Image (cartoon, rainbow, N blue to C red; front, side, top):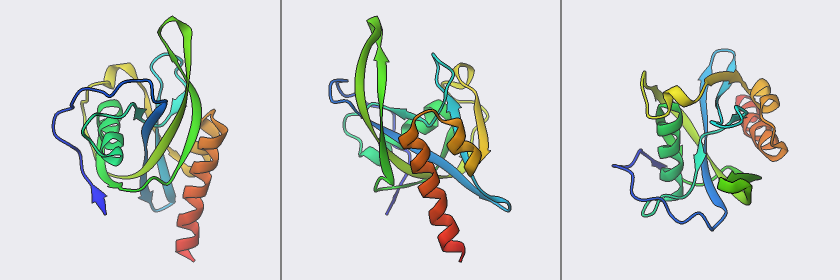
Length: 156
C-alpha cells in the first residue's frame, strides 16, 4: 500500500522518544537507481530527509512530509519501512539524543522548483553506489546498499 503527502503539518510530537522517520528518495534511470541526498543544515553532511514524528500522521506520511519540506520532492512512499539506522541528534546546548530512524522508500515522481528549506540545503542525485559512500552513518550506508541489491535481484 502506498501513501501520499498529507495536508498541512500538525504540531510536531515531543522530541523525547528518540525516534525519527526518513525518506529514501530514489528514481529509476537507464543507468540504474539514483538516490537523492540532501545536506544537513548545520554540518553540511550528506543525509536523507528525516525528522521527528508528526502528531496524527502515519510514520510513512511523516517521512514523505519531511522529504517535501527538506528537498521539495514527492511521490509514492512505501507504507512499511525498508530498514532503520541509528545516529546522535545534536540539540540545543550540545545535548546529544540517540535516535533510531525508520526509513521509508520514496519513489520520486515530482521535484518542485521551490520548497520551504531550499535556501538551507544542497541536494544532489547520486548513482546508488556513490550515495552509499557519501553518507557518514555506516548503518545508512548498508541500508542504501541493500536497497540497491533489491533492484539488482529484480532485474535478473
